[in-house]
Image 1 (cartoon, rainbow over the protein chains, first blue to last red):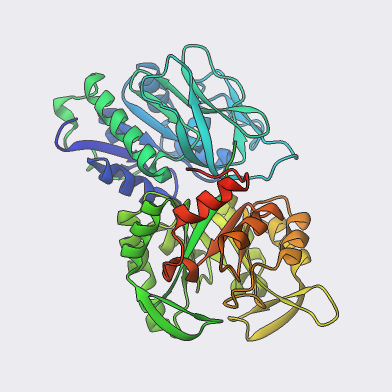
Image 2 (cartoon, rainbow over the protein chains, first blue to last red):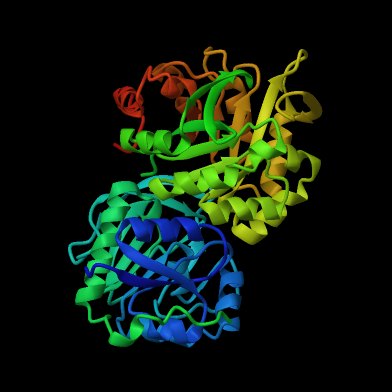
Length: 220
Length: 251
């Protein structure tokens, strides 16, 4: 990882943004918050955090004209980290907001945990990666979610956890990492994961000379 | 599988952690950021920071305290005390809280829970409930640090709060808080039966056995303050005792 890995964090809402920024700083990165299309196109490394409702978050991405930009960069394999609702936004949709289309990069939709467990799932759950994972390792991660994917889309390596049956804890493909859990709240294990993602983002060809001031663009 | 959480609580007044019985006779227990970092190192699963400042001036330090704690903390942080509206909640979240706990303000205006859930998500909206035993049986919700009885039944209020948007209940037994007599397990059972969201047990913990009892009675998480501040037990000690009794925790 370079001495100061600049990361653009998409402003998807208020909650938890400070924790994401603090986590990235602890991992050695220099994060900037933006919802400007130009900044997000130019970002060498991008974090898509997400809290709140699926429909409201998609509305915001549409209003900021970010839908195609985000989908394109994930399809192109540019360094991107999606967190919690961020993972679900990459999918086709969610039972939380019926009729609202997601970014459609992942061929999977989110459904709600069943009535047999306490919802939301709040706490630390054991994450077990498939053999193909390079960034994800076994360990405990902190989850705060009511919806989840129960099937992994083709072409991605998945890590799994158990709550009302098996669900997708995270997905990875090259320098693209999508976590249902919060790496920024998952202690030393989460911090190590953030560092591996930043390192993969360097190796993954995300670095471009033009990225340095990309974040200083007026918000939409 | 999902593990049970051990949550040290930092009661803060004017930017310092304090301890006392039922908010009386407060004594200084240290710096919030230093204690937060120490508890994370011991294996704490989450922290709760409650502002118990007596004055608005004292409470003004809360946002700065949250910022200092967030800078060193990489586990979840719930902040409560003095959250009156969406603006005060937003200020705490922007400073680094992951969840906000609302107590008196939610009793005065339950729609506040709905507004917080809509803006920040239900996983971010914690309903803090102080419950006192009634002479005739059952539990009544008390507010303004126990000075005021509301007439609300604790289970019914928790159930209504969840319907309004709360995603977690922080349940404190007013009778047990600070007494070291153990959690009120009957209260805990009544509330976990009434709601479908996670419930954090609080009030009365003095030993690893007390925390075990609460988790076995159905709590999803247990909160304690003085047993950690007094260094009687580390979070690691508690977790070893829980593992020995077959409770699933993060180790």
